[in-house]
Length: 79
Image (cartoon, rainbow, N blue to C red; front, side, top):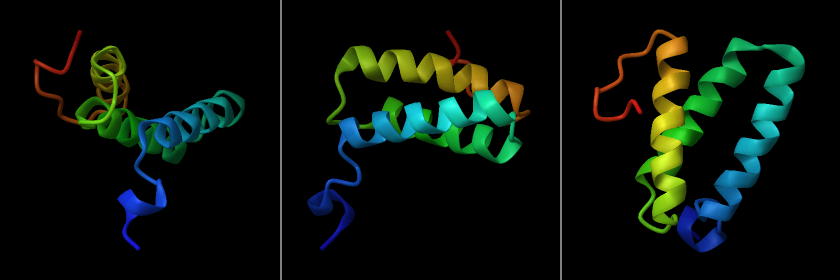
């Protein structure tokens, strides 16, 4: 069974994981969690099954998180 069939890449699952990661990052400030958050935001920003509002918000947030981590971010991603 692939990830799509198992539901692992459903937008709702990604959002739940993102909320979990953000909560734990707020408690610990762990840079590895920050990187995971950035990646989850990127996945949601590009996810064809996510609502357009979610994609837009995540694209902007990904830009902020990636910039804070020193990752290169295309200017179109920043809001």
